Image 1: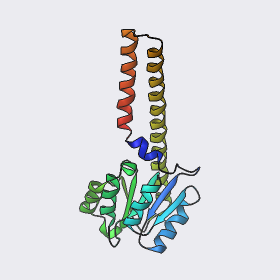
Image 2 (image 1 turned 180 degrees about the vertical axis):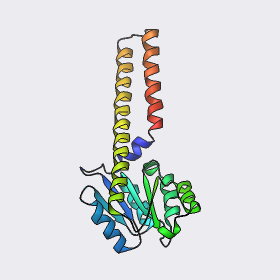
Image 3 (image 1 turned 90 degrees about the vertical axis):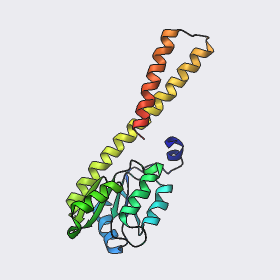
Image 4 (image 1 turned 90 degrees about the horizontal axis):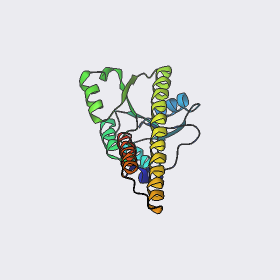
Length: 190
């Protein structure tokens, strides 16, 4: 269940956490320099290291290079989508402009990319894309937390009714309907 996995991850700091994955130290440093003013930036030099970090920490956005030894960006994106904690985390894949083909973009989206950037990366575009996906991520998380609160409140109401021996069919059916709606929303936010 998503709640139990996410509760074992470290929560978002005051600045949303962004993961930059690139085998090039120079690229990692450049991307981090663009983003670190607004975000808590972590870096990984490989797809394997990114997967390890994502098992320990929750990220609002992942910026992922395509060309890496070992697991390339497409394989890393696929592996990230298989992890429950990163199943819906926005992934921005970046690659060189000469690889800007329909086939590459299609392959990226099929692997789990949310968006693309092409090198050379324009800093303002990077900032805008990351900001947009961070905002969506934070809205999603706020909704998920509200659903958890609603589910807990419903459980308390059911328990209170049971304690008082109240089994009013109409009230119970209304509570069940609200509970089903909360459950549907919870499934959609996972």
